[in-house]
Length: 339
Image 1 (cartoon, rainbow, N blue to C red):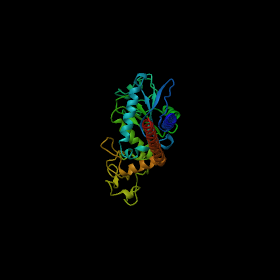
Image 2: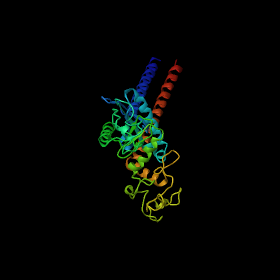
Image 3: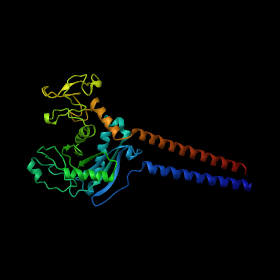
Image 4: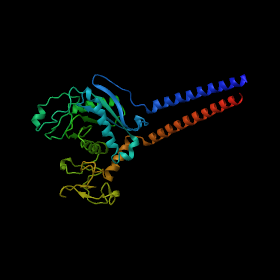
């Protein structure tokens, strides 16, 4: 009887040790695959957070956005992270981002400004913006080139923002500066700038079309701004336009710009590259180009394999734990029966 009790005790101990080892291994794998960037801080940085996207995907395989805040003081950092998360979710709910959501990761880097807002956000004229000397991290300002809603940062600040984003998230693909102002405004280019106005995120989406996919504007920006792209052309023949294979589908055709006298054509009459607003989508031509661009900047197959591996690990750990638990219960039952 004593020998059996010792046998049972030894096996229970071994089973418990095995379960603990498996759990430790599982936690280590979770830490390696899932843990977002740690908190990073210096004089002007509060922290870096992952605010949306696929937590299981590796940075190197993902399409990564980094939000940086401008005009958010030390006491307004939580507002910045909240708005960054809301913006990320809005983007992910937009076609074709929604159909490719597994490849995206959104980080937010908390940048502490000395003062809140942006220069000229309440100005009624350019001269009022010029006299606004607010001190913010990237010195964002309205009334760029005399246009009230044109919210931007200058080239030096743009490079600073890009370097910061790359420093903290080396695999970054695109940076967005969120400005702490509810006045509508924004701009695009190498980096996108947008205010907290509810409609400003639409500027971000439109500018992503330019920067990520090389799309042209489908409103008339003037002859000097026009160039041959996947969605703008001088070619009027439906069989020869860049989107010839999509003509006749989902409203895609060959539509003249403006009054038809420009000599330029586009594939849609209600695309997000022409109009801003949640009621407007990227047309199928622009959606296709964006999807192709996503593929160039990410590795969906590697992400899929990583997710399958993660699921396999979870399944293996659960099955192992259940099996070991069953063995322990069986040994305990034998122990009771022998008493």
